[in-house]
Image 1 (cartoon, rainbow, N blue to C red):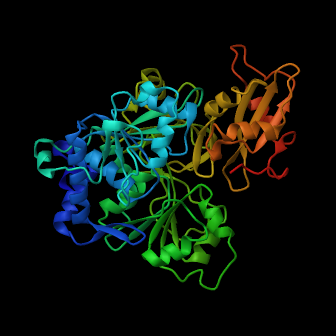
Image 2: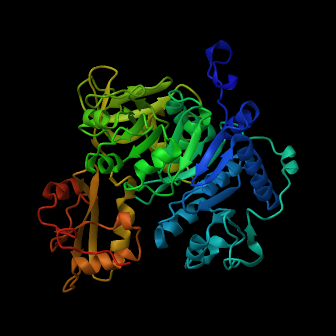
Image 3: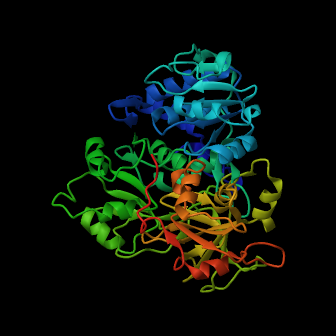
Length: 540
């Protein structure tokens, strides 16, 4: 751990290292140790430092420097991680957008970010060219971000197109560019909207360090972290950062595969991995085998915890750690390290994190009484700096100097916290966060639809499925299958509803005109059309 992470004079907490500083330190202390792996490709810490410095020089040569915003819109992989680290080295702000987004949702997120540049692969470049609002691309530089093959064409951006991996870049020009301070914004991550479109979270270097350190303190140089999580989420600083701070190795797979999971673990010698959402259920659901313990994996980060987590630990010979986190915070609660759990453990605050369970007036509730979890940190800059270009949402979320999570918790016994439910209108499906507002807006684009409400309903894997409650216009006819056909062209696959409930009566509303989804949720799915039961197949 760097001296900068220790207590400053008079007991104050000093700012931690940034990730680029940590890479430079490891490149000096153990340069030949492998940091990044993907299939047969690998980079040592020294090679990683050299690569990100060269990429940073290319960015800088085209005007990308401190506080300039650059969207990364690519498939997961080492090139994505290296571009992200190179932008961090410059003090630029990387804007990470889900590569599955398209149309109105993509335009909204680009409009909010107002980027100066893009890093794309050819598939995403084609998606940008199809945007109706071309002004979003005006005066931007477009970098081709893949190293394994040069782009066949300039992706339609003419002189503004730069091949990031083959353009000349002299790392010597970085001498005049200071490494960013840990208080600076490193990235913008998008979080699910609740009563409106998704918000852009300003994510600091210090926040990334704290998120990673919560796991890194239980790892060492011998560990190999196997990452299958989307890099457009805070899983990137969580997984990559944990391996980095520990001086360990990160092995990357572009997309989770239950069939390839154990062969990858054995091939890479992976000792630790993260299982978000339904991943643990998929792994546990495979038939038992004689070699279930014949692997190097020993540590599993699991959210949510399986009810039978003890059976999982026993079957696969692993220890498990769990936590509570959001894009805006930095793992304020966790289970206190890896353990061979017999049953799900309660969550406890990490050092410097302050947490409370409060009522509607923000007054602390006694242990045993459910309420909203609020969070703050004694150390500076380790929570989000706020929502990008959204002062009103920032003030509301951080009212009374606490960040309001919108999640229902109970503290029992004192100091032990347990998640109960989501208070805000957000859906979690198969590891992806879904803004119900954004799905509703796409449903309302159909000419037959008068009103729509989208909500999450319980799924057998412990997360949620998407239910769309739809009111049609007078005399309109719309089959559920036709609605899903329509939405497939407008939404990423994980946002397309599983359940559709068509109703004639208007949606129930409050006196101020807001839909009372609690009332709709009471109906559950008993009256809904189910695409799985009706053997609906997604069009290819």
